[in-house]
Amino acid sequence: MALRKILTDNDPALFKKCRPVTNFDQRLWDLIDDLQETLADANGAGLAAPQVGILRRVVIVVDDQENML
Image (cartoon, rainbow, N blue to C red; front, side):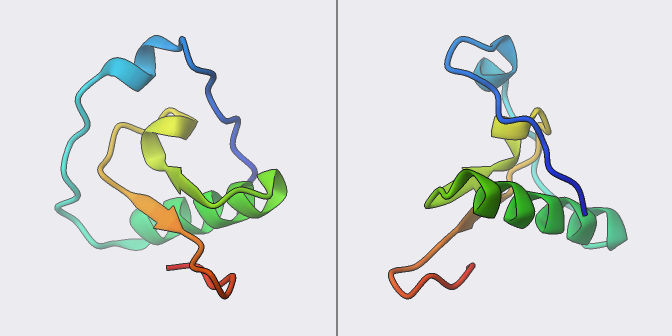
């Protein structure tokens, strides 16, 4: 797992169209692990792959009981 840099408001990558996830493989699980670690470090409520520069339709959210969904 690795902490990823969260992009800022004006980063051009945030305005690009993301590709759907078609392969549920180890690379996807590694990305999800990285998103979870990055979100926990930022003390946030949710994080999408484009926010860390990955143009895939992946998002994680913390529910009201602080469980990752």
